[in-house]
Length: 115
Length: 112
Image 1 (cartoon, rainbow over the protein chains, first blue to last red):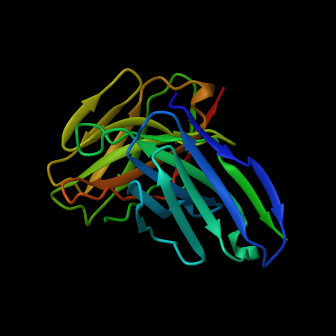
Image 2: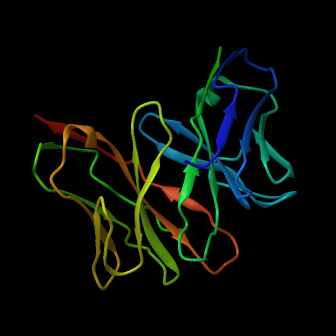
């Protein structure tokens, strides 16, 4: 398995507080992704990064921001958490997109509860 | 990117072949199809990927007809451990960006 870790693994926070989730990879993969997973919705792309300081929005980016200051770390920030952002968040990376295989390697997930 | 549609759930018995079909009517020329498997409390895991015709690996086969508007994941002789959610997604190459849209998944339950 690719060396992808997420921290924290579980978090409970209050509405209106800022929250930052971290994804860390040791594989030197260029592309990194943040998804959220909710019952009935599968996985939905929040933001992704195609290089250091290069990011773009996914399908559900409102209320989220990201940063990638170095290859191995991709941070997801909820500036002011809302109950609708209660979810399981997954990070993923891709080694060689467009070069034969776009296999995404997923982290173990972060369960976030906003009360 | 093309949205995908899959059956919500399927049941099967151990030892049977399972076929899960995914519809992607708006697939574009540069798009390809990938399938993932997800167990509870884990991230998805890659199963197989293809562009057209048939692809086979050690765990599954992927059938894609000529019009590419659908694809079928085939799992030979399933076991109880194949009980999971299976996702079909469409991705695009060539644009310099690699965004992926997951479907809602098919929950496969394998019965003894």
